[in-house]
Length: 100
Image (cartoon, rainbow, N blue to C red):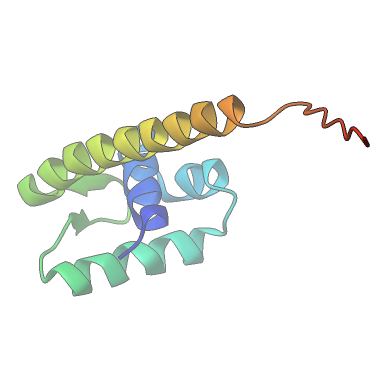
């Protein structure tokens, strides 16, 4: 399981369509579908009720989508904090050498 799996899961919840979610994640529909299935296998629970017409999340799936959103928010915060710290240590530095 990795962060990308959470991104795919959240995109699917937001778009309610495999092709649209895949486009939003810049992957093919089979790639997104396969990763969702792999996530289900890894977790040992169904996240979706598969239907040819609609994307239907199970109750477990909906709860995990909410958790995935929180995780992605925390990851973004972590990256933002690291970026701010990096900015504090970046910039121009002038070093002078005096010879006596």
